Amino acid sequence: MKDQKVRTAFFKVGETKIELLESTEADGPVGKFIEKRGQGVHHIAFAIDDTDQALKEAEAEGVQLIDKTSRKGAEGLKIGFLHPRSTFGVLTEFCSPIHPCEVVVSFITFNFHEAYLSIFQADHSNAGCRIGCTHLWV
Image (cartoon, rainbow, N blue to C red):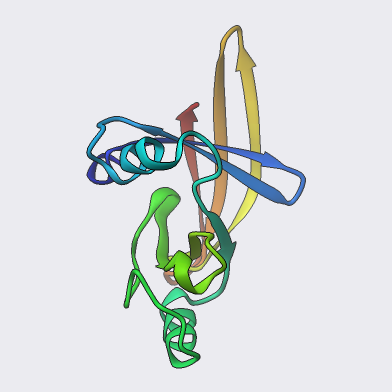
């Protein structure tokens, strides 16, 4: 995510996905976080159906938002953050698919010191259905 000055890698562990963030510039959001707090957990994300709706509901309940509306995040997701002041000091993220699709198959192939992640998705957003494949070096 060049605009966020961060490099990402994702690993699935059971039904949980872990995202590793590497700051590419000290003045980016993650670089500033590390400078202030040191290395560790940056945020917790929840996969939901509709990020914009969840942000509206959270704001209606008095939760302080970082994002009033969703923005594009990694892996083609719509994301929005809640301010840690409203979530017991934990930066919290809502994320939902931009287009309705489902992961059909995903696997990681390890080759020496590199990992190659393949994600096959069924995209139902258009008439008919197509299978797309994404390959990522992690």
